[in-house]
Length: 358
Image (cartoon, rainbow, N blue to C red; front, top):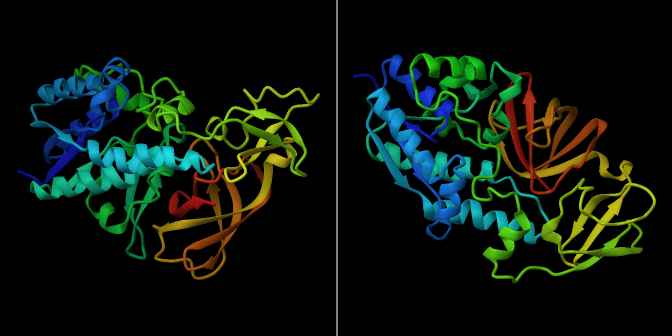
């Protein structure tokens, strides 16, 4: 048999085809679904599915049977609650907007799953991400954009270390979504036409503030003031967990012109609003750095930066201003730089590194 690989199977078409491709390439494939839903919300998750609901287990099990590979469910509830759900709540309470998928990748998939997989004798883990891993001329491994810009998922993977990349396979990144669905159809996989999950898996109803309220048993910041940049009180907000930078909808302010959230001040329980111009900025700082295509940033360099998952990227110059801080200056102002989100730097098609926006 070839080398052993554990494929994280979400019950979706991408991870199912990842398992198919690796089996065809001669690997000994084991399918694993990560059990991350919590006991108390089992019903909601079962109904809504998502990438990790109970329906995902049934779909993944059927695919594994079709592919004739062993299949297991591994329990990562505790890790998911601590590193993803609790972190999500904590960030919102501090006026920041978290990215739970990046936290899940870093702490659950590439720490807990990888650790458990190596413990059972696997050589690699694999996922259905639209990204590629390549070794560069300098000897380092780096994530490269997938062949299809429409599904590129490299942004959420910037935090992977060299050791983790050494143990990771991403077979789907060489194909378009249409090609993946066609392969699934040809292999008669039962999930060939299953819809992609879009929402944050543990908040299927998109009500982030309601979720935070339930997690905190109602002990969340209450109403406070909407203020202008100069401190003028403009109205009352519902509580800071309801807002994110750049938001326009749901402010319920009648000022005669559109306004947007420009800053959240948790200490004063204030939400600052301003014009569209005031939501734009030409610089940011980030920390919690991880470098990928290079070992460190020794001197200023020009890169392209993505400040959120759906951002197409903006040209900028980056330089280190501390052991774990980067100053990023954009050529043109960018909209809604949001503390708590990741900024990911690209050198051409390769992830250079990234950090958390301050």
